Amino acid sequence: MLRELFPAFRMMLFLTIATGLVYPFVVTGLCQAMFRGKANGSLVEVNGQPVGSTLIAQNFTKPEYFHPRPSAAGNGYDPTASSGSNLGPTSQKLYDRVKAGAEQFRKENPDYRGEIPADAITASGSGLDPEISVANALAQAPRVAKARGLNTADVESLVNNLTQSRDLGLLGEARLNVLEINLALDQKYRKAS
Image 1 (cartoon, one colour):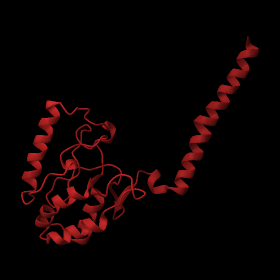
Image 2 (spheres, helix red, strand yellow; image 1 turned 180 degrees about the vertical axis):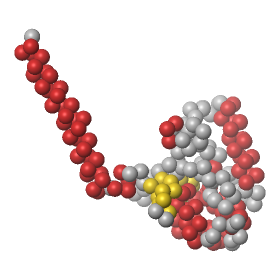
Image 3 (cartoon, one colour; image 1 turned 45 degrees about the horizontal axis):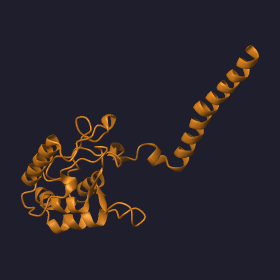
Image 4 (tube, helix red, strand yellow; image 1 turned 45 degrees about the vertical axis):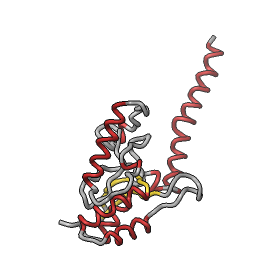
């Protein structure tokens, strides 16, 4: 019986070392060498201090900033509680949340008269989506411009300059990273105080 257990134990020890130690160290080393920023969470730094990640939304609520999509993750934008709401189209809870979101959007953006972009009032599948649609950004542009004492055209120009096109030219939609556009606003135009 020991003759049968010893090779099995050797194989288990070999696989534990190979897949539990060697492989993770090699992959981590390659990622750090080739994709350092992405491997470390795509952190964005201002004056040497991390202010956020381009991969996870943050709860911007001040009028001089673009606001992200609503979040269903924990207490909002909590990466440890990433998930959608799992509410279906016939859910009264979803209806009430979207209705409240639409009322809040109209209250925050009184100059916008068009149809509210869907991503302005619905959460993403992860609850952490860091990007908004161009339509959502343009709907918020008058509020941001007014709060910063700018022309709406200046803010819209920044939106157009920072718009990321579809992946590979056909996947997804054009979008803006909320953290990046808010940092660009702070850099290009001083915040209204």
